[in-house]
Every structure is written in C-alpha cells, then in structure tokens.
Length: 385
Image (tube, rainbow, N blue to C red):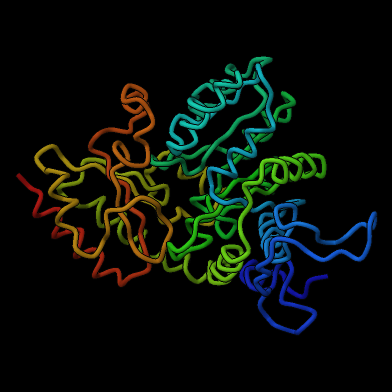
C-alpha cells in the first residue's frame, strides 16, 4: 500500500519506484535487447525488450497509477500510441472523432486506417444530442480531446463516457493537453486514455513518446498483444527520460498555468485580438464543464488577430517565443495550425470547424511572464498594418 495520497507525491514515488537490487532511487536504464534465460521451457520474467523492458515497465506502471487505470503502455510516439488503439477495430467499424482534433489523428484515420475499411465521422462532441444521433451500429468508439486541439473546445467527458457505455462502445480520451495532473478521464468513466508524452509529461522537448492507459484487464490484454505484435515500443533511455520528466510535472504545470492565465487575460484585453480560445476564461465555451472535470484551464491558448495585423510579420517578430511544432515544453512555442499541426486536414474541413488561416496557437512555457507578455506585445505591434 502506498504511503501517499496526493498526485504530487505519486508523480515522484508512483509505479515502480527505484531499484530494489542496488537501492538506487531512480529506475536504471536497462539498455539491452535480450535477457539470459535459466532454461528451456521456463517462463522468464524478461525475454526480449520489444515484449518487455524493466525501464519501460516502470514508466508503464507509473502512468497507469497516475491515470487511475489498470495498465499502461509506452510507445515510440503519440501517433504510435493512437495507431495501437485504433488497431483494436476491424473492417467495417467506424470511429467518431471530435470536430477539432490533432491533425495527425485525422491523417492516420483518413489515409491509413481507411485502407482497412475502418471509417471515421467528425462530430461536435460538445453537442450530446448530435453525438447520440451519430451513433450507428457501425460506430465502435468515440475519440475525443478535451480541451481539443487547436480550438480548446470542451467536451463533457463523463457524459460521453456514459453515452458510450449505454451503446456498448468505447470512449477514448486524448489527455495530452491536460495530463493526469489536471484531468483524469478514467475517473470520469473513460475506457482508454492516450497521451503524446512528448508534450507536458516529458516537458523538456527532448524526447518523443506516446502512452496509453486502459481501465480493464481485457483491454489491457488486447493492447499488450498489439504493442508486442506491431513493435512500436518506447526505448529504455527515452523511458528513463520520461520518468524523470514526470517527476517535475506538478511544479512545471503550476507555473505553466499561472503564466497562461495571465497571458490569456492580456490577450483577451488587447485591442489587436479579435478572438481568443482559452477554457480558463469565464466566458469561454465549456467553462463550467471544464471546471467540473479539470483542475483549471491548462496552458494552451489559441487566438486570432484583427485583419489589419499581418500574422507572418507577427511570427517573424517574436524574439523569445519560438515558432515550432509541438507544445508542453518548458519553453514557450507558437505555431500556425493551418500550415503546421493541422495541415493534413483539408481546408474545407478546417474552415467548417473554425481552424482559420488566421488562427495562432500558443503553448505557454515557464519563463518570466513579464518577458513573455512583452514579447507578444512587441510582435503584435510590429505586425500592425
């Protein structure tokens, strides 16, 4: 039985803590491909590192505990994690996805799984009546992000999970933007949680990884089989780095969110900002739902400038905030979803859901907030026509 109750302690001591052989407080990097066995026909604890590795196992136990699930699985990227989950489905099945999701999720469904006759439909999962009407016999799962990428729209995760249970289908939540420190979808009834651990969980923009957590043993067996069979596993060194990153998740996210709340208020009051998306603002879509299911609004902000501001100039004028793919690192990053993270989504689909060519997505880091606001302000000023 654990000697702690708070998640801040679980981040450091959860899962498989340390090394019983040596007393090391950090799980060692078991940089090996195979393991010597004691005899033919005996059941070894470890046999081959695609099937299992002690460093990866420590990470998988940690994320399972943090999310409150039955089992965790570590993959070589967030997309490898999503691919493994989508591999649960068969030809003729259909998956409902939120009306704004990460472009890579759309792309793998649209360009890869479509080859195996696994279909998708895009639905505003914030509209529960519409969502229920969209569930046909072919639908086997609902995959949502909340907050969604990049418009930060909120979905009632408990309501979606209940709806999925009533129809005998799976509820899958991509919890990348919130992490278990801010939101725990399995406690709200979700069957599967996915993370691009590259982002906040790693936290330092120095690794690429994906995680999956499931809430029952049958799903655990199925994902374990897929993970071993397809082989997209996370290596031991990156597993070690990810465990290390998770140890500081709480203190980092506290600072990320503190900065984001100030940045969101700054942008909301700025004369150049036409529209802002941040679920921590009281007038944001889904604000009350997000308050019920998450600790706060997180640290991602999207916004649009008025037409008399040139966004190309805005991006080029930023000095501290880097124009780059990804998010969730200690450094602040900005991107243009229409040509970067969501370029795989056809323009007519992007326009229909509100991912405009003027949309700017901002990942707020842990720098000094005054420096961040000054950088935003001067870049906006430079971009005015």
